[in-house]
Length: 476
Image 1 (cartoon, one colour):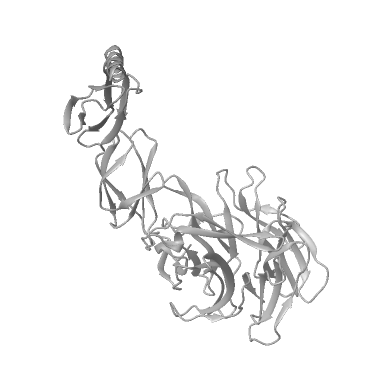
Image 2 (spheres, rainbow, N blue to C red; image 1 turned 180 degrees about the horizontal axis):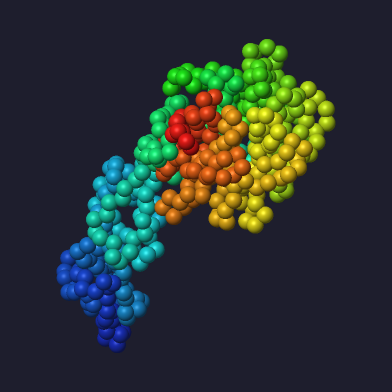
């Protein structure tokens, strides 16, 4: 009994010596309510009494902020500051979107009382299938009620490109602007309308018009989902230009990349670039279905963009060494066999109707931006046709039927401070440059129709990549 009394006395003495520790609890922002065990401790900064044998759970709350609870013990520092996160009500347009805070899912819109740090380190994002994600940085001046508006997604929101490799091609994807407005308001063109009706998993790559003036041959890239992986293939199709949305007919089939279709002068043979032998090479086939496929080029280079010279049996094409940073070169080879011959640096060769001049694309000498060049059949008299010192590219140059005009695509125009591709036309000598399309979307790959006024082109207007047609107004 005496030992128990001494023990109790000693304990009492210790408590008496140490006493109760006072801990000051403040908050950011100040003026929050502090409560412990159902009792109010007042407004922060509030004092909390603890000792060796008793801790307190303190709840800090303030309107417009998420509450926090802390455990105050004898070992706690004398001063504690509690930072409260603001609470936001998050809506989206359209509604029903997933809400993410710094990449972590927190609910669906409309969502109320979502706690977020407003120091500038928090990213609020909403996501919904079929729509592009919308995000914002939460700051001190961000209102309590937040509405994020998403833009409708579509294949036209991406531009795909094929990069030659040693064993084929790699598909790259980059985001791109696409306007939901499909109208064309340029005074220089009329009767702008959609010819094809592609799905959201199809991408027009390139196309050419057969000599009959009624049939387009086009390479279409398909995006497939195989065992939860995205895979691609590109085949060539025929379609009737006189009927919008007409059914298409397969020219090639298989899990390859068949691109850059270009017909022979008589329209009986189709030349194209393909990965059927691994790396890109030039092949051909008879459009009547007879004779099968035939290899035209085969070597260490990736060969693409074939073009037939009028009144000859020679094929011209671009070639690049896969994996190399070296520029592409244009080569010439007899279509029925023989050794290739290098002509000049450049790509995308296109012969004038009389076979005397070759159009091609090459970087300018100052900024190495793509420009339109022209040369004689033997590679002489190389002349840069498209000029300008801006950071733009002139690509996809094609001749008019009479050889007097050149139509091409360029991103020399600006949209919202960024270069935007539209269709342009100029004289064969490079003069009288005129912008034809002005829609905010990406317009490229123009091809003249047989009447010299109709133009077929690719566009992502309306959120999908399709082939469109338009008429050039008289005098342009």
